Length: 79
Image 1 (tube, rainbow, N blue to C red):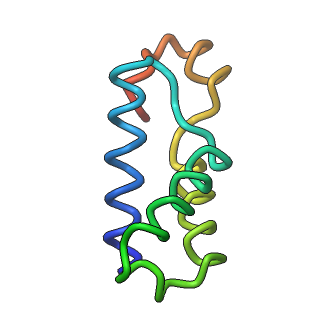
Image 2 (cartoon, rainbow, N blue to C red):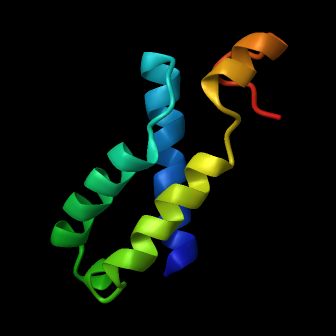
């Protein structure tokens, strides 16, 4: 279940990044997870705090924007 959530969040981050050339913050992901939990019954069994931790960890998986600029990485290139 957590892997499914991670993959869904990752797909959402990559879609927004490709379309808008920016990364979603953990706060934005948490808001989207809340909406997804309302729509998907199987995700309602997952504690909200666990879902929020997934969003926070996913945000940590990407370098901060200033680090990407300094290193010359585009928004889609990750270390």
